Length: 311
Figure 1: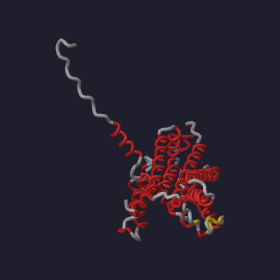
Figure 2: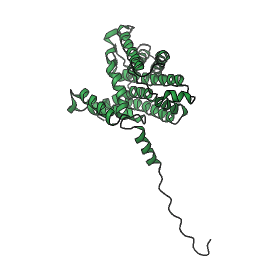
Figure 3: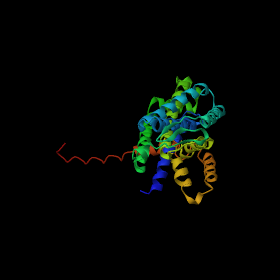
Figure 4: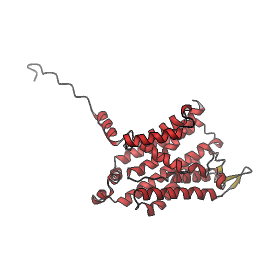
């Protein structure tokens, strides 16, 4: 397989994690412009664990996911009582605060005669665990999609659970959900922690894919895109945000026709879809229709008449 294609597919897979993170909060009716913060926290944490502490890759990814969930818990406790624009602005402010903190964060050790670790605005270089352990590009891509597949299975199980039903009830009307006995704040906090863990896991994968991260990568535009992926792809299923990522990165970014115009085309596409299909391409109605079609079974063939005397 071509290295350029492998790189694009790996990037699609990694960015899908932050898209799914924003999608999970959208299910509860919350618009977050700050999921890039948990993506950054996961990236830096996983990089520190593998490049500086020399621990295994799996430990680094796990630490990134835990750090993302812990950060989401800390920011969720004071903000999840907010609604609408107030919550969106609070998440944006948090993400910008995290980005600025990483611009000031310096923590390095010497490995093989070179300084390794976060160095403020210059970023975090030499996250080379994958190369040092002879993991090929295609092997890393398979790791990314294996974890993404496991995450999608988790979403499938969530959608069929009482917790998933509670998330959608809250997204439709949190007051009505509370009247029906749904613990709204607790459910939103669980959703925020899960979303933070997913973004943190994706951040850890991103750091090892690029071998270099810097605070400027995790700016507000990454948050806007992660939110827009769900709005483009649809909120009816977890496959919706993935469709949005494929449209943006797999088509607009990787196609020469849109070179220099990608942001214009992407913004126009979001605007049109918000008018034409407010819940995205794969909205709840379409997903329900598809499931009904797949669930239909052909009618049984009529039984042959019984021959006389053989009743």
